[in-house]
Length: 330
Image (cartoon, rainbow, N blue to C red; front, top):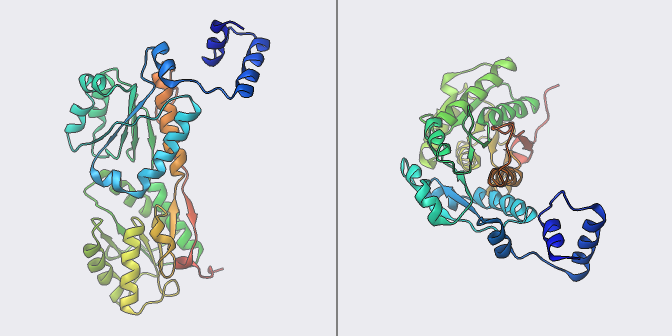
């Protein structure tokens, strides 16, 4: 078998006959051959590596980052790409500079995944796209236009959380939101309100508060919401760390969880499994989301056209634990 035919099989060239392809693949299995990524990169005239631009240090330090990375690495390995991540910690408009054509060449990567940059506007990302740099944006924005992204819809997340509390019998549901200065968190609030309307529940403004993702703010607002006689019997928390602070307040006020107040968070952090009681949470397929981002980026790097620039919404699911484990009202 000639070197040219073997090379075409490894490159998945359709011009190779099925018989020749079978001979080469059988020999690869028998000999335990593994393609040399550096050699393939030289042959293809590309780097066969992916860059990752993280919005801020908190995104890299967050445990969810590692879940995305597992999915990205698995996708790269499956597609024959080496995972040579170039991680940049940037803020604000620095992200635009970090993804300039000059930096793109210096990083020696074929494309970038933008992670956690929810404050970027669509026009800013469109400007990056016009630089002809393959990009995939992992975002919680509702994106229009020709931007490739994986989209996490907080509205659907909190709608799912309300539905779960309703299913276990809660009829007065409050919301400890994140930071309503952020568009993504405002979209989450709209999802919460839509669920309240759909299930015919009362919407009380004094049952909705911001956490700003700060434990002190959560504790102060949760104490205010839960101290009065007209308090909610269920709380949707912006995320698991917020839910844990609400749980702490309930314990201080002598309220039983879940019998007096049921609590549900978001993310399925490791912490949520070890509280007392363990926290119910809404989660998403984090590794699959990271894998899909890498899939899309590799397709762009290979010159493939992606029909749907915005990935369909990822479906949230509920992990029920002790904080909502009570009988539903029939």
